[in-house]
Image 1 (spheres, one colour):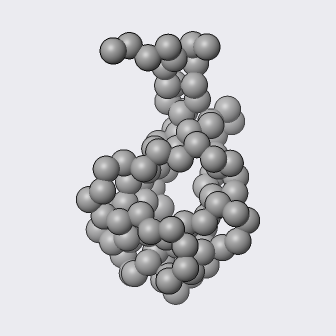
Image 2 (cartoon, one colour):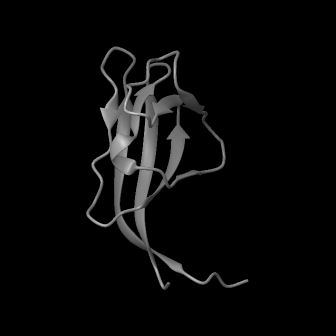
Length: 98
């Protein structure tokens, strides 16, 4: 099945989450409206309501889960490692073809 749109890649970032640091936000490329994310090594927690997550509060992105596709306000997204050594891989896209 062909979709009525296509995703245009705009960039990639890899963040290492630290349980001793503060929550981090995304550096969103201009025009990006979708983030495709996967957790690696250890789980990551996120919040997108303008409040920073903690190691125990926030929505969990577990390791070895199917990729997480986020289409909310990318500038509000913040994450932190749920435990030390966590990694979050992020690819950014914009939608084209409407």
